[in-house]
Length: 229
Image (cartoon, rainbow, N blue to C red; front, side, top):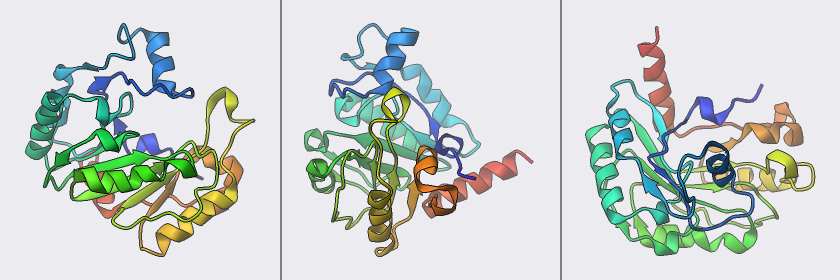
């Protein structure tokens, strides 16, 4: 039985809003539905949520589930990076579709910087991530995957996630099994763990699902279990 990634990595939406304008954006639809902020194209920083990062029980946190790191101001980045440095018990993930707009240099051991790639034409984002973000850990998310990325330069990438379209369009547009298999084989050839999101299970079949985490994330989950005993 496949595992839901949200049970392993918790969304902590310190910033809500994005200017990129993807047609399939679930975050924009959520904001429209729940009126979280007035204008999704004007990202807002929720400073009061920083205190959640101080919780002693270890967590894996995704900090950009409702935003794009490229839309964060440098002041927001500095505040969040300071909290990350103060809380080594957690692991923190960031995602962007515009790594070309970033200029980050950090030695944080528990911060993971990644890009979203949805098609072969966006593979440049991985190169731009390595060029513009100097960090300890990199990851790449291939979701939703609209075409075959074919050969991918995964040099220096520490984890990849593969997923498909969800919602009303999932029957018309979906990730083909062979694309996910190819990405997995390429990653495994470099000893990179792969996580196929649970929405791929009907496409891949449960027996073919690969759901691997970086060791650092696994250690966090082990510590969590000790806290909950």
